[in-house]
Image (cartoon, rainbow over all chains, first blue to last red; front, top):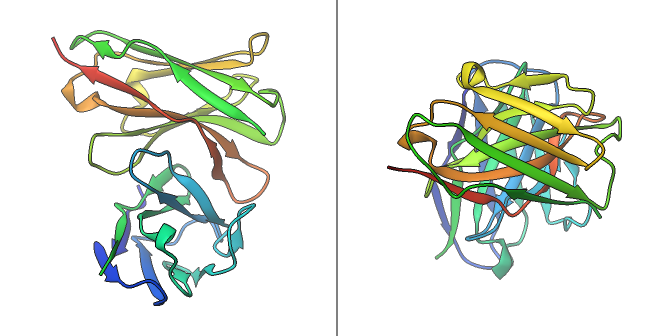
Length: 107
Length: 121
C-alpha cells in the first residue's frame, strides 16, 4: 500500500498569506494520479485539484498543484477567510489512499 | 448536477452486517466514465477509501477491507449499495458515497453529505 504523508500537520497563517502544503508518497505510483481535497467542519470533502495540477470546476485560480514522483505540493497563493480548512491529498496506484490531512488554521 | 445521498441504519451491533444504499440523482449511474465509491471517516479522523463499483458490477476494494465488503448496483433505481460484515467499533464512521471519475486520473469529484454509522451494542 502506498502511504501518503502530509506536512505540516497544522499550518497557522493569516489571510492574504501564501500557504504551501506538502504530500509525500512512500513510493512512486501511477503518473499524475494525485488529487487534493478541502474539507470544512461538518461538510463532505470537496475536490480541488486532480491530475496533480488541474483545477476542478469552480475552483479559484489561487489554488494550484504541482509535483512529480513522490513529492507533491498544494499552494494557495493568497489566503481568503474561507480557505481555512483541512486539506487531504489522495493517490491512485492500484488502490486509493489518502494522506492524514493538513489543518490550515487562522493565525 | 449529480447528487448522492446515502441511507441506512445509524446503529449496528457488533459482529452484524452494515448495509448502506446510495441514491444517485441528476445523472445516470450507467455513465461509462464513472465508478461509484464508498469512503469513510471515523469521528475526528481522516479519510479511508473502502472500494468502488462500476454499474456493470466490476469492483475493486481496499485490500484491508476486501474480505468483509460487498458492493451491488441497481441500475433500475440508480442506486448502489455497500455491505460490510462482522463490524466492530472500529467501523464507526461517517460513510460517504462518492462519484469516482475514471476518465482522467482517477479522483472523486462529487460527494454525498455522508451518513453516520455507529457500531455499538
